[in-house]
Length: 331
Image 1 (spheres, rainbow, N blue to C red):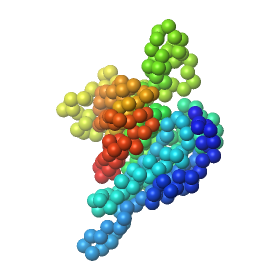
Image 2: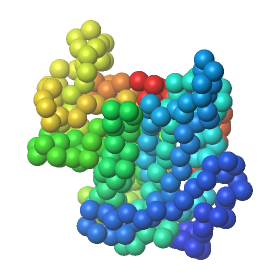
Image 3: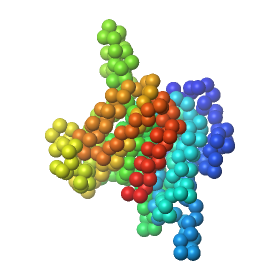
Image 4: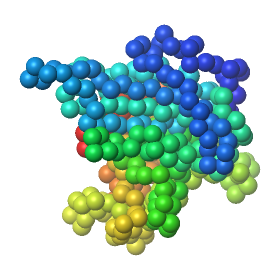
């Protein structure tokens, strides 16, 4: 529901600037793979100057680029204060001198905020692939700087992130093309599929809704997308080894052998809201279990007092996100 609440598409970054502290956001435009104009909000903090042996230097050796994929309702600007708080924590003066710079690219899908077009599963997946490609082109790894990339999806955005990851892995495996490596995936309040949600919301077998899954236009089947990632990716040792108690040889789920084009499996963080009023806890558990069977390095954190939409406003949620992004950045 990109137009809910009313007038959300007319909101501006400036409406929330005071709540973003020292973080300054700017709106940029990119084109999706089919030419649809998209809006993105961009902010970056390179960290303060650190004095070492009497000399000052900027933290330019490492950069972590976070691609934020929002949930279904509202627009991008209201989400910027929470993202700003996390960005400030990541680049605080208490960080070690070797801390990376951080950049957040918050995508407005087609039909959302000031982006053009109409939303669909195919379209949103293409939008996510396009911003991933844009990120790799804009912030490439060079001899002077190493860049890590993280996909962060919230609710619907988690499904978009996994779908984009699967499409990226398939492009690299089958055609030797693709935008580039994804080092981390953060799934905030994810669900396994729209069909599964229908069954959860309408458990009564006498109601027709639970049987309508095959007629859906948008499925967002994250379980199937994760299996596609496993088939087209490889896991560096020691995660994908017989010594790993969660390792599966691939007979059931399918795991690719290491090849030049295959994408390395990213680290995964799953955040589940303890008081989620929309998505039952079983969805996060199923996704975690599947990630382990595929050989992924996955961690699940339960934010006990959080509702579906406010996980990162809680201390446990913020701490988990900051720790995960720092782990990726320093990896």
